[in-house]
Image 1 (cartoon, one colour):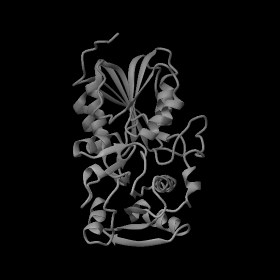
Image 2 (cartoon, one colour):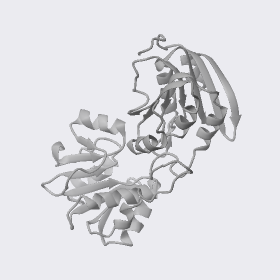
Image 3 (cartoon, helix red, strand yellow):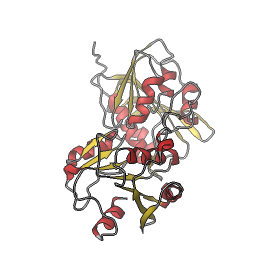
Image 4 (tube, one colour):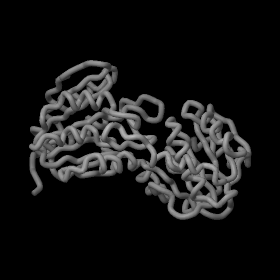
Length: 335
């Protein structure tokens, strides 16, 4: 995405203001823009990984816009309501007439975004390159109803979700299957990639659980989880689950790990979750995971756990229990 934006700016097809801050919503990587000093750029993203990468690149990152900006760049995503919400948020942090740029791949919803915007506002121009499009318009107060999308987002039963997060429209079938299969947990544990908290809520039904760490990379999902899981035994961590580490060795870990990076299947993410779980567990700890049946996790599980069994396979999913972590920590406890 940044390559298309960079080309448009370098060739003069698109122009950014010479002064003032630029808000960049949901970039996949630190948004280094040609001709723009890094201290003028604010990345707006719910991603803990992106925030860490921006800090290393010398670019400010926030979960929401802070103050006024001279221009905004929005990267469209696959979830149409989330893209609409981002466009409304971008316009709201600009003065009327300031430039708003929208970029995305054709496979990620840029054409519907262009259609949606053209129904409300005059689009100044667009730049097509590398199976995607960058288009822009001048900010105007015509997106107020889109700004209310998050506020009006429907509940998933008794659970709050949010536009753009994983399983925003309801309970994920894999998580539901794992929750049904799990025996009562006990001791201290973690839910890696906890999302909006459905699986954690199920785990905490066991009174023998003393503490549960919900580790989630998406800030929006974690904020929803804080409302969905009010149990005082819950601890919330906005972090990359593959890098997070609790000082105590854990008794159990549950997970429904992500396996996509954008639209591309990326089993490496699930393998990293498996490795991380083995590292966090005590010698007697157990790891419970649900995954799509076709995902090749067996070699990674065998590499990091001494005992692995497939508990159930149904409806396109598999539930695996793994124990005897090979890189697990001593079962010490913090008071």
